[in-house]
Image (cartoon, rainbow over the protein chains, first blue to last red):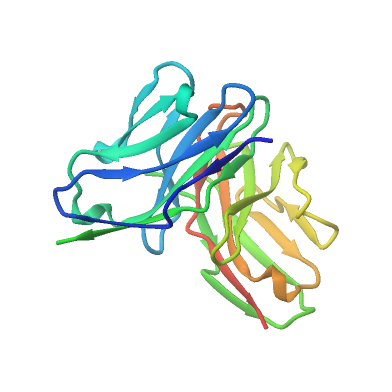
Length: 113
Length: 115
């Protein structure tokens, strides 16, 4: 079965510091991977998605993620955190041929001024 | 920018009561989904809907649940007889395509509290 694991339910970084949110996937076939963000009182918004076209995926708001098959990882990064990045981040996977997303447990990012 | 909307934002109900959660998907989308998130747990898929019928459903989506598109804009999730364990945030989503790489657009969620 395909699933994702997000290490760290809470991550705190200083404003301007590197953001690294971890996601590892479990899949026997190449997965399709997604990062969603949820700002307070809002819905889940797609940040970026990996569809096997390129291993380094750039998303909105300066975020990017790199698909590493050898590490079964799809970590989300941003070089410099901004206060507006404070939110909950969800990694998700979709299995080939299916429509439904399988989500991780989420990581709450706090940005310290 | 088009968005998915959900009402109400918070619903409180007594155990055993019926609840209907409402969603208005993005207008030109054809594929609709419900997910839920129990507090502290993962977001879980419930059901997908296309062309007026269920296309996929999870084990969670038992006979207590039903979905409907009663008109051209609304998409509803009904829970017939709520249980305490149905307390969760329910998210509606829609997409304009069906496929592994399509993007699902999510609403802000309805928090259901069953007392």
